[in-house]
Image (cartoon, rainbow, N blue to C red):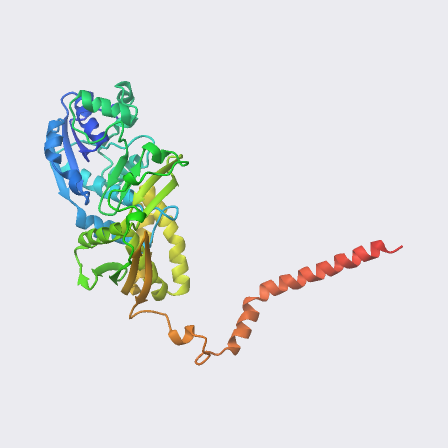
Length: 424
């Protein structure tokens, strides 16, 4: 798609190393092109400080910054939470779930500014290229997609890794925070921050404590636990310690990040299987999300009927794959969401979570819709016909009994045959 010369491009601009380099490169690659730098505020904090000025200094003709924190929390993170989706058990999908939102608004900015192309800074080895481009195709397939890291000219210009990108930035006077000594690739938003590169790339090496940004190392966490109470309605978190956060989901996550980060909650070092084929290693910090997932799980355990709960767990794996693969707007993800949201109608109540030395542990849960019956769960036999269990087991185990009888008959037959052969 890069062989088409665009007139106006909207670049998904973060101010990080890759997009800082790509912005002026686009002006060089397509003489006369107008570049709109679009930055999405997803809760990355100080990273957006001065971003308008930086984009202008790097050659942007227009700069658009949108505050998408509430939409990100309530229309992306919370639906994923209701699904209780993860990727390969440990990854809470912080980068994965953010890309469709950024790309959607990027297309909207293209429409608003009269642009005919969209561009991103994801590399040809990463998952994000897929997430951005699948969203472009789903939202407006008529736009030209520019992916510099897949453009042979980008490589011809000497840009083939992060070290050469640092050199390029220095030659062109582009202000960047990265150096060749501090070469971590980080992606931060309200839900998490991810770290890749440097010693993290070697699975035989322990990541250094200096990598942690929004949480403390576990050894520096307080020696006394802290408890938080979360309120849920229909699977959505709506209150923290008795304070309502309805309509302010982004503020709730931010508050939990501060609490969890203080106790080293949500730190994961993970080797994951990328969509494009290779394995990669990253360090993730998801303090608030980890607390929410733990609380949500405890509430589902008491509110969901067994078969529904098990099926929901099974489908959560597929949901997580779809998010990781960039298929947020895939009809299957949307259909699974309908199932999830129906199941979540009963997930209402309060959960108390203990934060201590890197762990978030749900210690109590209560719900007006709970299916947990203390009398039934106790060792007392009142109100429960124990004699019915005998017939239930007989019927439930009938296929196994039939097979056992058959195998016993075969063993006897083989034993008799062996005895007969031993006789003189």
